[in-house]
Image (tube, rainbow over all chains, first blue to last red; front, side, top):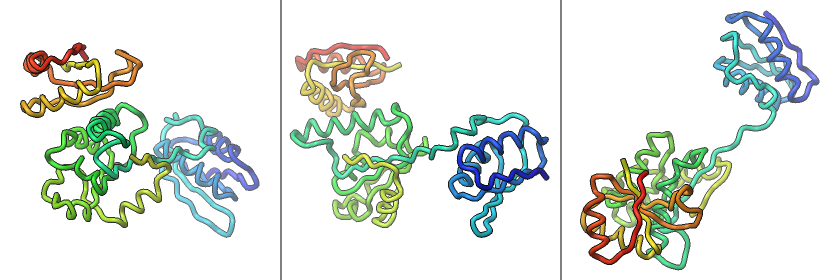
Length: 199
Length: 70
């Protein structure tokens, strides 16, 4: 088994050393990488995972040892150095009412429709759409947005609908898309989001 | 294929959308696509098969509009 000793090395060095070592072994062969800072360790793991490998890591004091079996001869994500920067964090969109902005309700209603109807044209997609208070009306059976929201759900966007709100408006039976959720999940989702777009 | 209907004012777009709803025609409110105009505005995206009916309704209601193929 080949070993890369990247102790004392800062990013992107451990990544570059890992990539070089990978090029020197055959598919199926094991590689172990020793790193002494958590950021580099996470970046190397992400680099290996994105290239279809299954790295495992152990920690002893401040030293991490990553072991991995080389997969293919060529890398899908060959730019090791780019793994130095943190991955972009997800964003979510929060709908607290069934309108966008203030001033005119009828304008606000079509603005929110137009916005939801083009969510899938702007990349990256949000990880979650959260609907609470009057926002839940957008997810009800008579909303013109149900089909669009279902399409977004199929593309991997999680749709959370506040259950308390649905009960309050006596709309529980009419929620036509998404998962009826609770305050814990909604707060966790907002806490973990990299960025929140609040409407 | 789909068509996009453009209006002179957002108020007309709102009226046209209401008329669609009242007549049970499905339409999707979208911002005016960038390749048509860089100005902010609202448009309706409709199915090809509904074009004739919608055109008839908006004309009957005196709403001036433009139609684009998508």
